[in-house]
Image (tube, rainbow, N blue to C red; front, side, top):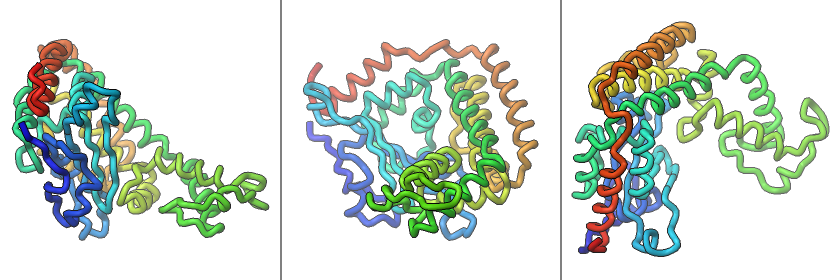
Length: 326
């Protein structure tokens, strides 16, 4: 059965058709928005305060060699202009679902208007989302939320000062701090004086890049996000993620439904813009962590996903796509 979906056939607004294939793999069965668009929190580029990329997530069936031969890569990630895309091979995707990964689960509960492309097998995947309804999501949602909490609170004055010093040193040597693309000769240069005297410029650049990954997400809007962090004194975008994740996790434990498109989007946007103080965010987070624990204890959801049904679903999708007749 010929069911191939070529990446170049999928349309993404404001992205030339010939570039779509750079962003996405072939054999997609599902593609949808994630991140701010999915949560009704996207601030378009026309707004000078925008710090949002256009985030998308796909699921694809790998070539038959992946399953019967030596295997192939099972994740494709690509930044292109404002687009931030990640696509998972279906077996990898279902394994992440079994681990209750919040971002991956969200694709199954995405409202139809945020689905970009859906093959009949992608629809089958979403129709079977009940397989992954489990109280084990408590651990993954809380874990992700706690990681956001740490990232948000660890950006202190000392870290800001260190990053400013690193930026100054890198810029002084003519390196673009947003691109961070030095030649090997520039990386090998030994700094003659100043706070980093005796160190290789490459070491300083790597240290700065590591801090940038830790405190900012990078991506298309990384520079604007960095300025917002400096302005409010903490990563307010992480704060928005933190509160959203905790609320979504509690709702899921109580209802067995993931509310991806947020009814509380306006309040979450206010947090994201830095309109809440760090203390207010921390107080709300602490309240929600307690509510999440109570919801977990009281939840009537199954203790874990049905892995046997998940495996059968995975086999059916691969079988039907490639006509293997298992």
